[in-house]
Length: 263
Image 1 (cartoon, rainbow, N blue to C red):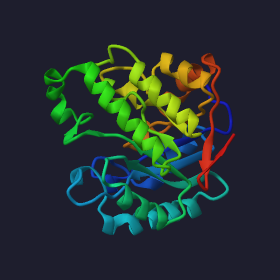
Image 2: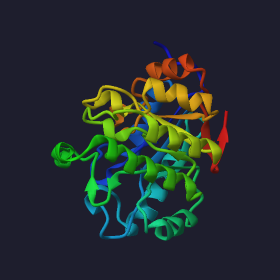
Image 3: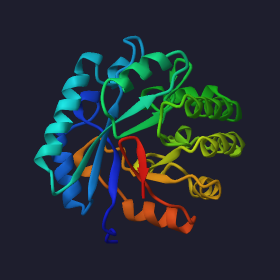
Image 4: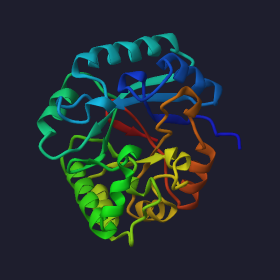
């Protein structure tokens, strides 16, 4: 389906995260080719050296990231609205580090994501076998509590891929933990990353699920469309389907600029 005008892809990465390909310029061109009006780069935030180092830029690469995005902004000015963001991690104990990073530059949009349960990177396919050792109810309660903690920090504009633990097909026995998290997200006025990457994963479902999309909408939570692109060809991935799911739930889509929601 053709996309309506004005859409932006607000969750994309760069090779600095060590698991993406393509120059940011190629992502911008892909956004233009897809008929998008905007693109926000949200590469993985630098973290303390002991945390998840193989999957994100180093702290000494942050300036390079910012400079590269600014160069792409200038190159595509008047053709594509390119914005500067981060996908920041919530891992208890690292909040001060993240806060310092966020104070260093004028970000447009910051996603708050939970990728670890303790020492376990639960969305990493290398470690997916660990699901067989876990009680899914307990897993989702732990994850939901971390999402609540992320929302309460006040550091983030949205919560990333809300139901990420389903990535490999391990669905929650019930949505109670995520519904409690949505209550907190709504109460604090945050948005949700509507992340189409789930349609590329074994679960074959976007984050959030249709049911959670409806639950978020009833709570007045807006959505920010994102492909979670790690290659230029993934920019704008299945945005028509994303809009259909949000529209069916009666939801609304926003973008962020200067850490403020628009739309």
